[in-house]
Image 1 (cartoon, rainbow, N blue to C red):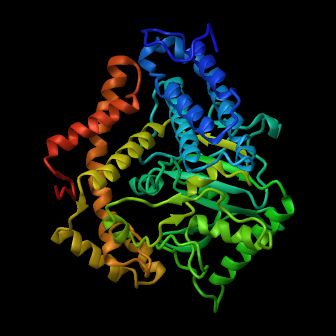
Image 2 (cartoon, rainbow, N blue to C red):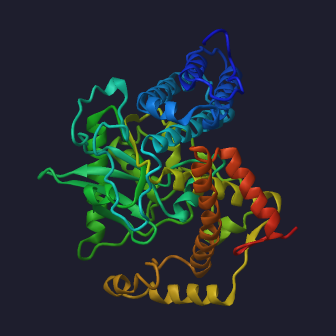
Image 3 (cartoon, helix red, strand yellow):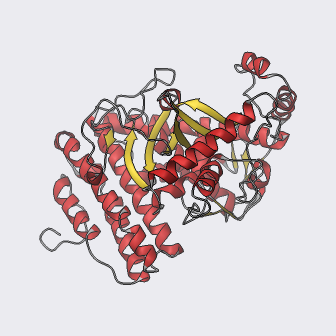
Length: 468
C-alpha cells in the first residue's frame, strides 16, 4: 500500500498508477480463514470498482494504459494461482467463489476500459472484418509470466487445450449471465491437432449440436474475448482431445448418430452435450475418471423459473463456461480481447444482469405476440429441412435444430429484440459520455440508466412484462 492508504481517495485527477499500487497491496495480503478470504476479496472488489476513469486526466491515463494492462492481468493471475491452495485449505466456499468471480469480472472491465481508451475508442463496424483471436503479444493478448512464451505472431496451441470464448450476440450475454454469479463468457470448446498438424475445435453448438470446426474459423468468427486453458498433464489432455474428436467425427460419418445440443444443462448422461459438458466428457474419458470438471459449479437459482422453463433448463447445478475462470485443474495459457467491441460486451452484460434481476424482483416474463408465435412456428417447420435448405434460408430464419421446441425459439427471438432496443439506448449514452468526458460510462452509470429505462417503460420493456 502507498502512504498507508487502503481505500481510494475520491478526488478529481488522481494518480491511477498510485491507486493501482493500493490495489496491488490488497491482492498480496495473506489470508488464514475462509471468512477472511471472502472479506479480503470483497475489499479488493470495492477498491477496483471505485476506480472511475472520471477521477483521472484521460490524456495521462491513455499514456499509462499500455503499461497498466499487463500489470492488471498479472494481478488477476496471481490470485488465480492461489485457488488450488485455497481449495486445499477449505477456503473456497460458495461465498469465496462468488467474491473471487466478482473480482475477476470487475478487474477485466477495468482493463477493457483502459484498452478502449488506449485505441482512442475505435469501434469495429458490426458488419466489419473480425479480428482473429490471439494474434500476438501486443496489448490485446496477455500471457502469464510463468508460461515463458516468447513473442510470436501466434500462440503455440496444443492438442487438448480448452478455449473459453465470448461472442457478440445478445444471446451470448444471456448465457454468460444465467447463473448465480455473473460471467463474461458464453462458450467453450476443445482443441484437437491431427497428424497433419491441422488445428480443430471440437464444440457443441445450439444450432448444430456437436461439431468439429477449423480453429482459424473459430478464432475469426465474431469473438470479443477468449482465454486459452491447458491441463498440466499433456498425456491426459491429448487423450481427452483424441476421445472427443473421435466421438464427434464418428457422429458425422455415414451411419453415425448425431449428438444434439443438451438444452437441459444437466451433467448426467452424455447422449446430448452442451459446450461445457462436451469438455467435461472429454476429460472424464481422457483421464479415466480422474479429472472431473468443474471443481466449482454454477447454481441456477433464479426465483422466476419462467425463463428457464422456456429455454429448456432442467437443473439447479451445471457446468457453465465461466466456471473455468476459477478452475484449479487447468492453467491459463493466454487471454485475449478485442477492445473495439468490449464496450458492446460490457453493455450487454449489464443489460442482461438487469433483465434477470427484474425477473426476480418484479416478476417480469416474456409475453408472446402473434408475430412471435408465427416466427417460432415457422422456425420449427424450418428445423426439419435439410442442412442445405437451412443454409439458403439463414438470412430469413436462423438455423434451428430439430430438438429446439417452439417456446425456446420464441424466447430467443423475444430476448434478442428486447435487448437490441435497450442496447441501442445504452450505446448512445456511452458515445455521449465519451464525447463529453473522454471516458466510457462507469458500470454504476449503466445500471442507473437501465433503472431509468425500467421506470419510463411502466412495466413493459420490449417483450418483457412485469406482473407486479
